[in-house]
Amino acid sequence: MGITEPDYAAANARLRPPFFAKLPHDFQELSPSYRAGNPEGLAAWQALEHQAIPGVRITPKMKQPLTWARLESIKHPTLLMTGDSDLYTPPSLLRMQAQHMPHADVQVVVEAGHSPYWQQPVIFNQILLEFLAKQK
Image (cartoon, rainbow, N blue to C red; front, side, top):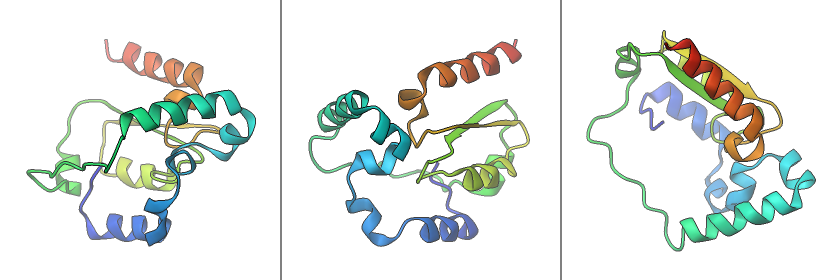
């Protein structure tokens, strides 16, 4: 999310040591269960990842810092979703975000990492469609 609050930054620093960014992206984003149990899906994800990031990853600069106060100002229903094996946004960080988003619906996808839409597409789509149906 790019949250700039010191407590959130400290939690992220505890999660990911400096060498984390040098690890293979499939290790960073896909769950161990998926990497071990779906070699074809892993190979397809790796092929797409190499096409999507042909060189240095570019991170856009934010015009305004994303603070807890800014998150708390969101009045629209928001779906926050992560995988239970997500190394970027594990459930504990997602709950930290949700504490500052009163209209957030928090969902954790089992045996998924940072890319639950790829690893658990049926469950991901079910969660998304149920969330959207509630917004009518």
